[in-house]
Image (cartoon, rainbow, N blue to C red; front, side, top):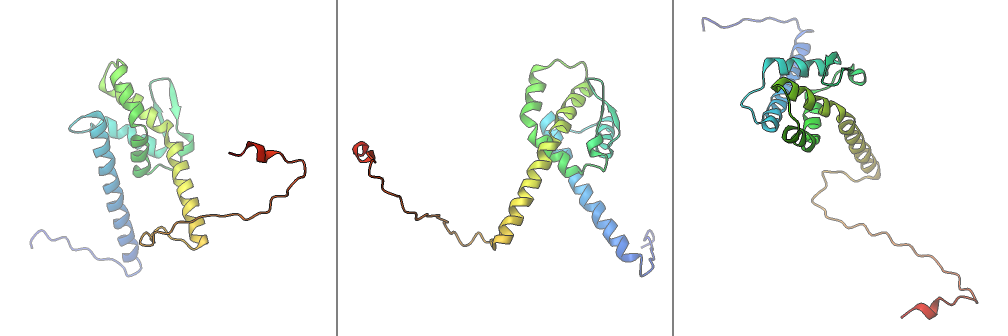
Length: 177
């Protein structure tokens, strides 16, 4: 076709290009999922450009001015993925719904900043949840059980056999029915 873009890559650069392209597609999918979650929570047809500026600032760990003074996301300086922010919004959904119903905001931006602060505050809970899941899955893997073995429904019963020393002065038999 007339508008065909002809791109040529070095043999060493092409695998890097494919990795970068796959990463960008994955990140775009995660951003779309976050967008859908936020549209559902805030009941809006679309999220504005300024809102995405704030989300990008949180992702990059920049200073952002929120409702109660300045907040610096120092803990997340290495960057927060869209999927973690999405999980934080889902985790904070009840708190955000309460805030939207009960607080009186002056503008939609102030409303979003307040809710973003709630979600950023709950990022630690999302990270802890992921770390616990990874630890349990690693433990199950070491024990020889995989999460994918759902076909075999096995019930694990632990039984302990231990001898109870009988005491001559034991009167517990009087309390048995």
